[in-house]
Image (spheres, rainbow, N blue to C red):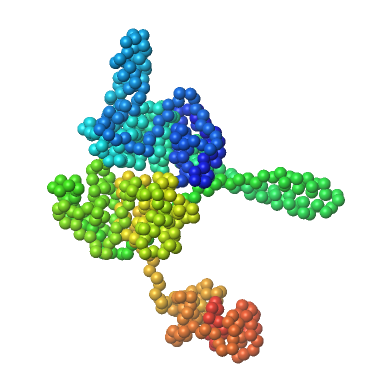
Length: 583
């Protein structure tokens, strides 16, 4: 049993966790979810003892073995295979002791323990885990320093899985994995015998692997049984139940207040009223479930360009002369295309994206691109290159050179960096928040294609999916003046008609519906300027066509409807009702 007892954490004067409490049963596979910056990674660091809580404690059985991926990727001349084997520190220590032990009784205990921990099949298990994460036999024998940061994090994950801890803690484990490795990891975690706590924004992983959801919101945590789909259903039911209870309580409170107000002054009912007043004082309001604020952002519609946007004709691209990574590329991209690049890590997906974004030149063949095209390019490496000493406001000010401070803050607000968040140091932001910050400069460019880098940890995936799924993304053309729609003088211009025939009220057409009705039309069809008011009349007043009492427009119109005023003329530029002087 893993107990989280009243954990409170404050960072930089901001409350991250507020007396968070939960009990995780042994062997549970827990999905820790919540919006970016809610404190998921903070809670996990408290669990492993990397961060000390201001209040509360984590309780677990003695000698519980915790497994957690360190932030620093492994490096050096050791191979991935050697690094994974070294992760089982007990096995390594027992093997070293067995080589130098002279005590036969102790040596027997050492070999018995080696058999118990299945030490002699360690090589096969390590190779199998590395193979599942994308390392073939040749790659397992290469030094760590020859790999990129993403591949080194795979080695760290392989070492953690190999060590088989009692409690396995994973923070966004699929960030550096391709599709095949992610599917392998899901199958591995399904069969994991220990307790698992995983932070993820991947809906498939949360549905296929976990059986308990730990939801973190507003510094509090709530436990739900089932996978993510079950969590959504249970939470919706709980919200409905609380809303019904609140409505019932509000109704009861209103009845009690009415009774107290009506009967307090009467001697015969004063005692009952006083009792009702005490009931009101003891009535505690039912708290609502805290809404998890969701982020919704959009990219501006690009300027419409003629197809094709980009064409590749037998192109080749690479980083070293005469050694192309990709060759004989033939590709055409049109404005309405939605393209997904799939393939194992190292197959050249990022290289192709950099070629399309004009960050790498073609080593052979031809590449043609529209001269008016602008490209927005986002990759996971941009997140890693963000300076931890900058604030989002400083970062966006540099990215939006020449823009006003208001425009910069407005752009930050679209991506969830408003108020104090705009001046918080990047080093104190969560991984998802840093990803949003790296993505934010792409939006104001009005790009034609947007090329998200492979493996980018984008915090809010639903808006990106919605944008990509929109086949048109075109702005509606404005209706030109004189398009045929006109507005009659009834019901404040709520009824419209075309050029022939009266409207539903039976009135003849009077005012054009373009631009707030600044043009009027005579029965012969000629367009004339809308009258701005008649001489001697104040704005907002009207009178009979032949003179007489001046009234506010609304009052005059009501009198006309009763037949008291035969003809009413608009007297103000902003009057909502306009009629011809002849009736």
